[in-house]
Image (cartoon, rainbow, N blue to C red; front, top):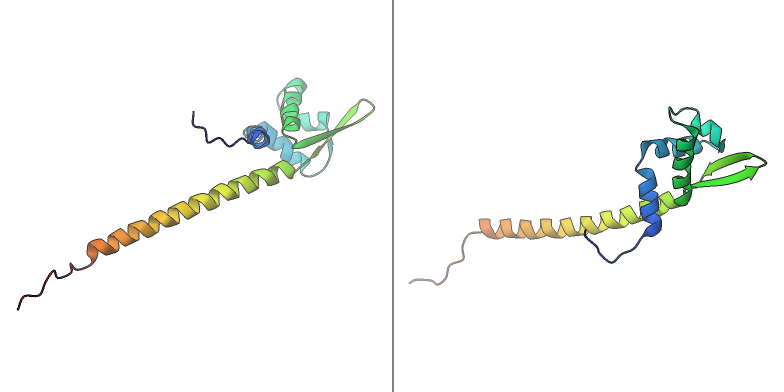
Length: 125
């Protein structure tokens, strides 16, 4: 296991939550507006208990907020963790772009040096 010393527990939770297609579908539905747990469960061919487990994982990642009204539970989408993940990805992308640009410049310099005519070492008269 490779470690860099960088810790991102919230990012880890976000990416883990997004790794499952059922959870992504739940977020897609919530992006259109608040919904009851039972409404969210309806399109899935899994038990309400299974959908609740997916919702709990989304809540742990803070991608979903819950409010209770009596016995009803209403869920809404919280995009803030996605913004954080997008920033992290953009930082990595910029870092790799810089590294690849530096490598490209190095390789181009080597190609140029390999195709350049050899310099004359001394003039013979």
